[in-house]
Length: 234
Image (cartoon, rainbow, N blue to C red; front, side):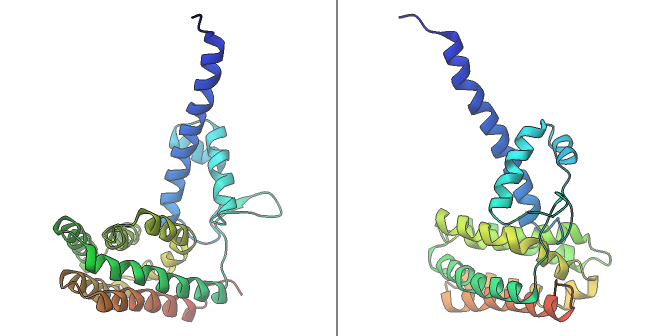
């Protein structure tokens, strides 16, 4: 049977573009989820394309998806930026996170394996070590906080649940930035270290209620601090 090479190329080329777009989306999403971008920060398509080593097209596709996710927004002058969030919106987001992420932590306590527990313990220790430094790297600390939380949620054994939580963190990550980057004293005294340790201990003991409470306290403490600073949009 004769194979039409032109038809073959037409099938392959869109797949390649889709792969690059997915990679660009994954990398930009990670910056948002990890809190490495702050509310109001602008996104340069050209700069992102250069950093990722791709053409503008995959970056445009990725940004369009993130705008649809409401993780990025287009301003009236056509600039692309991380959305500003009001205190009321952030409080609502925190309440939703408490329900869903608290449930994931409770599930992790009952379902975790020894490998899961080791991952959670390693993430908790890395966050604690960085936070205890005299001059901690705030950007790294924000990322380590994310690593701890997602190690907990992965232990719940539900990819769908983790996917839902990542969607919440696309919006929450940049605002969490305002807490963990506040000051070294905030890192040491703000409660995250204690709540992470409490969550780890609860998951180790397979105590779902305590794990839920620890994650809820962590989210609430960060939200209360961020809102009290008046750093969110009116």
